[in-house]
Image (cartoon, rainbow, N blue to C red; front, top):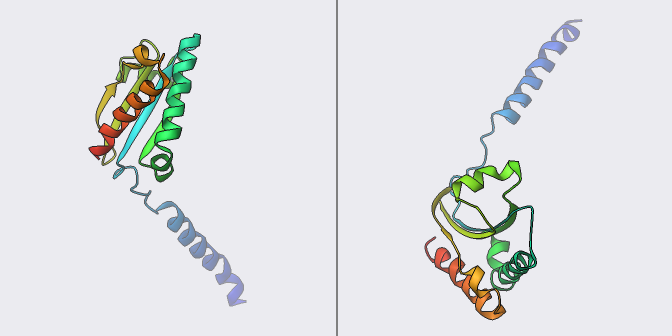
Length: 145
């Protein structure tokens, strides 16, 4: 009879311990110590043939020149529609008004510097020069990590 009365108490103590263990576990510190180069290609809703070509060239450059660094987490590449309301913070942060390639260096989880790589508009007619330019921009920021 005594064991029946103590069962709810023991169950409550065990469940409380489990809940405390689950919800008091600190989040991983990965974000705070993150060192990475982020490469963003921003585009709007309306996209011309040149904009699509530039996006494809950037994707080629990232895939051909930074596959290992992307797999290792040293480089992150994203294609983002800055006209989407959920991405409006990028528009303000990077002063976006058109399709843009932004290279961002993150040290210890905080953006330390960023650059608008504007030459994409003048180099898109020469695939090799374009890819070399993008690779050079990203490598410059990788060296600083």
